[in-house]
Amino acid sequence: MTDGNTGREAYPDEAGAPGSGRSAKMLGGGLAVALLAMIGAAGGWLLAGEDGASPGLPAAESGVSSSAAPSGVPSPTARTTAPTARTSGPTRSTGLTVPPVVGTDFEQARDELRDLRLSWRLVFGTESGRDVRRTVPPVGSPVQRGTTVALYVAGPAPSLRAPDLVGDDCADAAEDLVEEGLYPRYPTGRTGTVTAQSPKADSTVHWNDEVALTCGEEPDEPSAEAPPTP
Image (cartoon, rainbow, N blue to C red; front, side, top):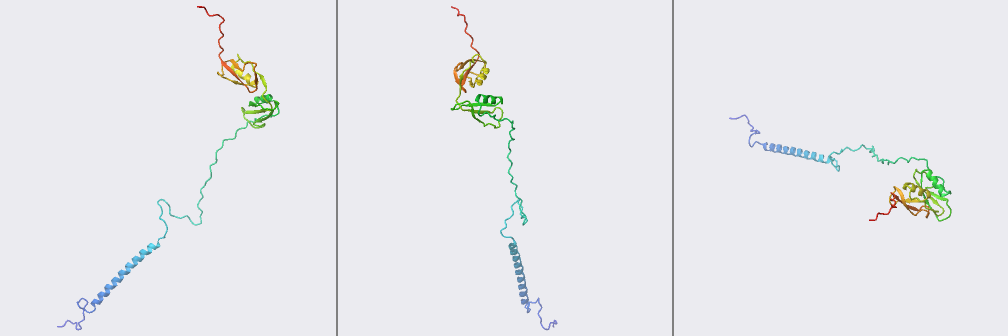
């Protein structure tokens, strides 16, 4: 009894069929080649990703923009203008200047300064004469009222007699001394009546000398009556 396969051709499912082992080997080899190709492609993609990164560029710091300034556009320059120093306003000029007293008698120069409400200081020299040789500040210098002007006199300080000031008011006595060219000194205060002075009245003194004024209450006069006898 026959099955119609007279040539005894082998079917693929039959064991020992000719060509079945060769087909299996070819199928397995193809799968291996395809797998290797996929692995190679994946490795190449990874390598390409690493090589594509720009080398040497640091990561942007937190909070700092990583965008670069446009090429050719200059960066803005910081303004460093120094603050202007504040200066006080100019002193208002009074129009007052040191009068032209050089060459005049020192007493006349002193009186002129006093009329202008300027103070004075006499500096006597070693030559002869009463004339003013120079002033400090110089003549013509702008000054304020109350400024002291030094008068440099050619000759030495003249001599004079000390005035009698005992019994006068202390303030009035001081004014008299200044008028005479002397300077008052107050050992006990500036109020009250002059009870004593030194040097004494009519003593020889010189311009710029000091006279001490003892001011205060006048001492009680001693009683002329004799004390009672016990």
